[in-house]
Every structure is written in C-alpha cells, then in structure tokens.
Image (tube, rainbow, N blue to C red):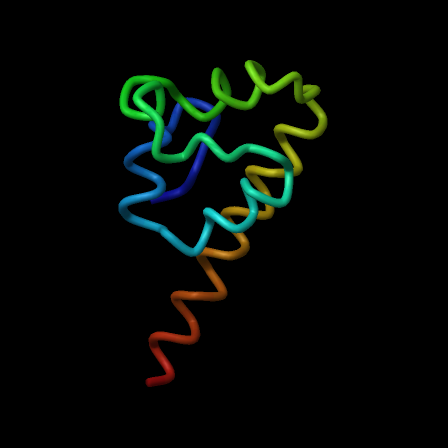
Length: 76
C-alpha cells in the first residue's frame, strides 16, 4: 500500500505503525482520535495547518519508512 493524501489515517496507522513517529515529528498527534477513522491523510494534515509542500514531504517520508521497514523484515 502506497500512502497518498487520500489514504485513511486509521488504516495507515494500523497497517504501518512505523509511520506514526513521522506524524508525531510534525506535531500530528491525533492518530488515535475519532477523526482518524474517517479522515484521509490530506484532510488531517491540512487541519493541522500544514502547507501542501509539507504534506507532500510527509507522505514521501512515510512511504520511504514503509520501504525501509519492508526491506529490514525481508532480511530476517
């Protein structure tokens, strides 16, 4: 699953918990809140006042983290 602005926040957290730290780094601490179950990532990040440029950066970092985690798991 590649993360996009349309990805559901709760699904991201459930399927890729390694991405939560990235959200926390940007001050987005609501990964477990009620809105996370129906809000997509773009909506959630915009609600936190993040610019479009910052949102794209976060999504890129999250996808890179998922790839790193997957490679590490394959080496086990």
